[in-house]
Length: 374
Image (cartoon, rainbow, N blue to C red; front, side):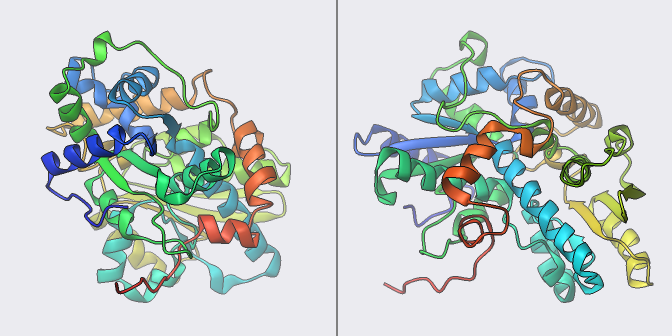
C-alpha cells in the first residue's frame, strides 16, 4: 500500500502505478467515476460531453489493468444505504437526525470541517461512492480470487484532485478504501506518455466480476443527481410514484422542493458552490426544515471538478452535465434504481447481507481508526 497520496507528483504517480502493473503477484483493479466518461475525450479531440464509457474501459485495459469497475456501482450502494438510513429516521420520528448532508463530495466535507464544524455530525455516515467502490473491489476480489489484501491494488480515475485525500481514510482493519487516485487530466497525460490514443482504442466492457450500475448511480456526477437518485430509490422502497426527475436536472445553483412520498413529505435542497451554500444555509439556521441537502463544491457538480481537463468554460461544463444525464439514461445500464441492479443484489447476497448490517457498516461507512505508529 502506498504511503503517498501523490498530490502534484504526476511522474512519481505514473512510476508507482507502472511498478504495480508490472508486478505478477498483484491484481490491479481500477474504477471510473461517472464524470470522467464525459470529459476524458477532450484530451483526444472529442467534444465535451461525449459518453466514452466503453473507450475509457478499453484505454484502462490497454494500460494494463486487470479489472475495470464503474464507480456508479458504489453510488448505487451509497444511495441504497442512504435511503434506508433516512427512512428509519422518518419511521422513528427522529427530527434531530435531520437535515442530512451528502458525504460524496470531499470538497464539501473539508469545507464543513473548517467553516461549520458544528453541523458535520449531520453529514451522512455512509462513505463516498469512490470509497465504497474501492472497499467492495478489494473485499470482493479477496473473496472471489482467494487472495490476501496486500496482493490487490485498487486505483480510481476521478474528476477531482481532492479525492486523493480519500486514500488516507481507513477501514476498521486499517487498510485503505482505495490505494491510488488518478485524475482525469492525469489519465490523459499518462495515456499519451504511453503512446495511446483514445480514438484508436476499441471499446471494452466492465469486469465480469463486478459489472454494471443503475441510472441513479451514473447521475450522481452532475448537480441534482444525488437528490434525484435518493428520491427515486426511496420511492421504489416505499412502492409509491417516483418524483419528476426533470426538476432536479436543471443547472440552477440552488434547487429546492417539497416532495410527497407515500405518508412522508420531504423537503430537499441541492446547491453547488460554497457561496451558494452559505445563502441556503442561512435559511436553515433561521429555522427552515430540510431533510436532505446535496452540496457540491464545484460548478455543475463533479463534471466541473478540479481534476478535469482545462479550461473549465461554462460551455464545456454545460455540455458535460448534459452528456452525463444522457449517459445516465443510456440503455447500456443495468437498471433505473439501485435495487434493480443485479450486481448490487449479488453484493448484498454474497457480501453485505442487508442495508445497515454490521458487515455493511464495516465496509461502507466512515470509520475513525487509530493507525499503527510503526
